Amino acid sequence: MNKEEKEKVHSPKIDMREMVRQIYALVKRSQENFDSSNYGENDIRKDIFTYMKSELQFLMLGIMLSKELTSYECFWSKWRNSPSQEENVKNHQGDFLNSLFNSFYFLFFVQVENYLRLIANDINKEKFSIMKTFKNLAKEYYLSKEDENLFSIFSELRNLSHNGGFYNKENKSIEFKGRIFNFKKGKGTILPFSVIENNIFIAEHIIDLIEKINQKTEKIDYIENNYAKIEFTYE
Figure 1: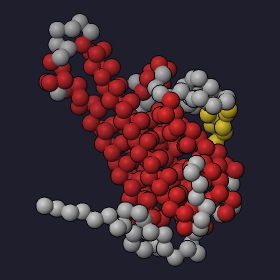
Figure 2: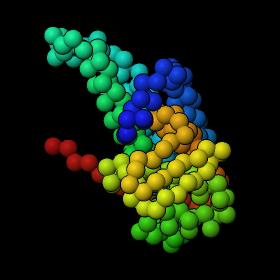
Figure 3: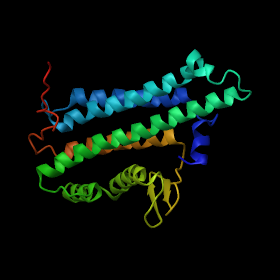
C-alpha cells in the first residue's frame, strides 16, 4: 500500500460504521444464496457462498475490533513515554487495517479462483492461468465484456502481491461500472477509492458474477467441492 492509499485508510471521509453495514449486507446476501441454492450438498456452486461469507465476516470483525486496539494497556505501554504516542498508536492501527484489507482480498480471491477452476475442470476448460481459465468460461457461458473487465481487475490487483504491490506489466486502464482502474508499470495501482471501499465494491460485484455463473451452469448436475473428501484423523 502506497502513502496515498494509507492516507485513505484514515480518511475522516470514510465512515467505518457504514463500511461495516455494507459488509454485513454482503454477509446476509451470501447466506441467503447458500440457503436458497438448488445445488446439493458439497456442490461448489452452493458452498462458495459459505466461504465468501466467512471471509466477509472476518473482514467485518477485524474492522470492528480495530478501534479497541488503542484501549489495550499492553498496546499503549510501549509508547507511554513517547510524546507522539497517539500518532504511533494510529500508525499501528493503520498497519493492522492494512494487513486486514490485504488478507481479506487475497483469501477472497483464493476461494473464487478455486470455484472457477472446479467449474472449468468439469467441462475441460481449465488452464494454468486463471485469467485464461476465466476467458474460457466467459466464452462457454456467454459472459459479458463487463464481466471480463471485473475479473481482470480482481486478478490484476491480486497479482500485485507477487511484486511487492507494484505492477510489472505494460500500462493499462480497465473500466468497470464507470470506475477507472489505472495500472502503471513499476508503480502501485491507482484505485478510484479507498482500499476498504474497493474491497467492498469488488466483493459485491464478484457475488453478482457468481450468481450469474451458477445460473448458466444449471445443466451440470453436480460439481464436487474439492474440500468434500478431506478427512481428519484425531489422536
